[in-house]
Image (cartoon, rainbow, N blue to C red; front, side):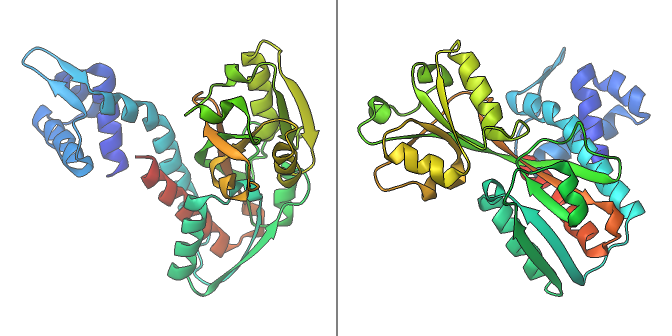
Length: 298
């Protein structure tokens, strides 16, 4: 699927008229119709419901429409990198990462990248303190759960690569144990254990604020320095914890996890790329990651 196809779909999805969309795109209606049909066949879904009098978006079409601005921005970022950075298939890349970000999809990308470019060495270093945007200047790539998109300098490229769902970790014999899922409102009068609660750019602090708001303030909080400390407190019955999906395998023996139903309850994974090092291998890594997660989002 090309950016031209995405743009054509977006114009049609906003006008809901083949004649008006074709006029804006300076192509014929038959060409536009053929391109949309090709997209639907490629995706194996119907994007529009058509009749002799109207064109209506399907639920799949509405979802794709909501994603188009982000997809086109990612495509522009890739083009910018290709035009401004030297791409190299050997060398080394220094990568700072947070343990919160190494979910299945990120690890799969790292393995695929290493197999595709065996002459590039990935030097992975964990972030041991609170992530800060200035950390990126000491490395090539930073994979972080923290949102610095609004404050990042112009010489740092950044993307929201993906998100992962959130779970609630509960101690043994907790009343939630019989529930198939919970909402944040259900946490009222609970004690929420929050790792890195002082890191206001991080997801744990963000989710604790959302949870307290949903509970109208009827939620106690206990802060810890690490996820491991928080999980131990949950096992000891000191409270509950919101954690990313992939940390489910880190819980203690008697702790249980339950899905959280609130759509705003998720853990983001951001990737920051330091252009200043002129590292062609890092440019290739960032470009490849953009392309990989762009495909995953469709």
